[in-house]
Image 1 (cartoon, one colour):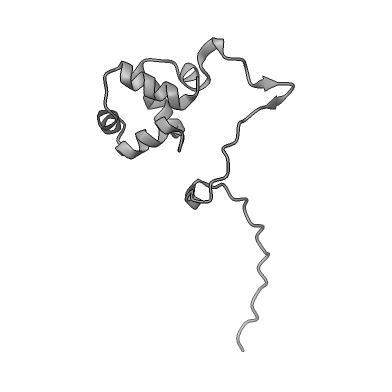
Image 2 (cartoon, rainbow, N blue to C red; image 1 turned 180 degrees about the vertical axis):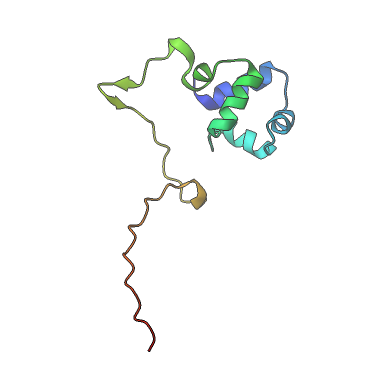
Length: 110
C-alpha cells in the first residue's frame, strides 16, 4: 500500500478529520490533504509525529511492515521518482550546488 493511502486510512481509522490532525501536528489542513493525495510527502519530523499519533512504528508507516519486499537489492536502493511537474514550486526541486569561484584579491587603493 502506498504511503498516501496509509495516511488517509490511518487518519480515518482514528476518527480524525484532516483539520484535527493538522492541529495536532501544527501543520495546515492543506498539508494533510497534499500528503493524502500524494502531491507532497511529510518531512521526517512529521512522519515521526504521525507514527506516534497513529500508534504504528515508523518503519511500518513508511515501508509497510514486514509484508512488503525490501527495496535494498544488490547494494543499491531503489527509490521511485515522482514524475516531473512544471507547476511544482521550486522549493520542492533539489538543485545541485554551483561550484564556487575562487575570489581574486582586489588591489589595494593607492
